[in-house]
Length: 514
Image 1 (tube, one colour):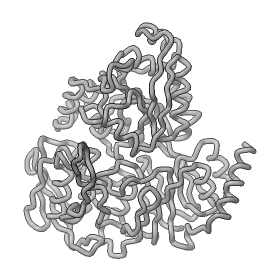
Image 2 (image 1 turned 120 degrees about the horizontal axis):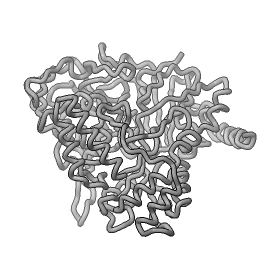
Image 3 (image 1 turned 90 degrees about the horizontal axis):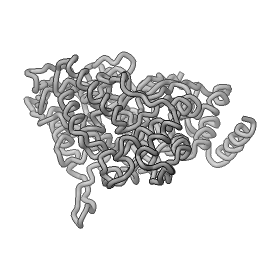
Image 4 (image 1 turned 180 degrees about the vertical axis):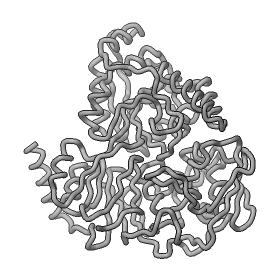
């Protein structure tokens, strides 16, 4: 610990020498940092948590879900009703302006949702919009959303994760080279214009993003009036540098503080350290369907061996730390429909070796092992696999490099994470990975059909039964291996009044200086 402290103090000294502290209460500038290079601030075209956090502060959706009570509240829509089981009529708020000064009305809602719901929109998290057939303008402040089928999770999809942009917003999207010499529109290159508490004033891809307080934010928003003048996001790849910056005041907020550093930071007079659970799953995606060809992953005994080889409890307790829990199923327990009474695979390396031998691999095998986030966690998983003879060659990439490999049928085994965009419904987790989309490496028709039915029936008990059947089969077949649900340890400026919530969301629009 002394060596760790000395290393950190040296990093702090270098940080102080390198740059002045621009964060903090005195400058009314709140600076936060993670290691992620933000690809785009448009939530529809980048599924990074950092883009979601930015969107909540910058943008408004039709409905707001209170992060403390989970109650749905009017935001850009003031009221709503189901006209029939597939038609949702919504009255819209009057007097709201976008950050560019244009008035908000029904055409903006229709243009935004019709664009992202289109099959060729390349929108990343399709579950949010795939239920929408079309959005109809009734008058300037009323829309009808026509669903393809009854959609019990509609309100969840319309809250937070579906920002509304001005009509014609994507018209300026540039054309970029596509496959086979064709071109495509890069919709994510268009900088979002929103109605929310903060305005985006500067964005440097992969480096930083700046939001400034919107003084004209409308009265009566459930988000409240913003307080802090400026919010800056910075990419700081090195964890030690992040810690040094928060200690010296160059940064006001970081997350993912390693357990070995949390106690030391908590002893510092200028910092608050808090741990909380999240909704982010960590899991192994295995190519059971053979999308990469005929590999060991297509044998259920190999997949079960992998599950038995990993000490999930040890990783959760000793590495991930406070707030984290072992993940029992391919969903998060707080989500509707998340069945956790499924087959479990206790840590048993001898059982793993026996299953590998039974499958024809008594000496194990080699394969590429892809990952992109929290390298120490991936290395711990790899060490367990190597101990039973599975020799993984770690391919640790940025998400922007890994994503094309997943879509392109090139990952036999990948260590992935997913936060469900904070949505409290299993359709946003289980449904995302097992309905024959680009992320589905199981391709089980029975599971797909159960999940499709679960997403289109309004009978609560029937939905729960369908999710239960799907999740039990996913576990029995060891299609994917759940590892843990992240806990997050946050370290932030003691001058900051910041509400820590259990959704891995940073609701910075609620923050203020003490």
